[in-house]
Image (cartoon, rainbow, N blue to C red; front, side, top):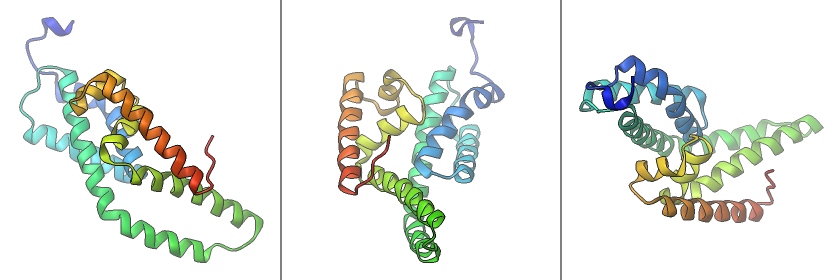
Length: 176
């Protein structure tokens, strides 16, 4: 059945089945935690059930849910930033200096360096990169979610990548 012939909003089951993967990827990239991403996705869908006006089609539901999960994920990360920094310091102190310990430390440092570099970006640059690289959204979809033009999305992603590359280079981190 085509979207034009549907007269009702899509069922919750249909919305959940189609959109959970993309909502999950966006949240996972922002939070860096599968458990947190899953919890935040479920919270987004609960809010969709409770508070969203009936949305006319799956695309409207997709954009609404992406906005909700993005905001929930960013708020989650703001609360956890200090906790992660303290935990990282503790892990660094407890890692031995064996060769395997050194490799583990380098990998952890690279991951945290990339996350730190992402965290330095303003929302206007970070969000399009997260949506594109980890949410799998097209430029058109990102433009719709953010309320900007496709060309503006392309410019923001280009600028974000430049800043990320520079920030990582300054930390001596090479990511292929």
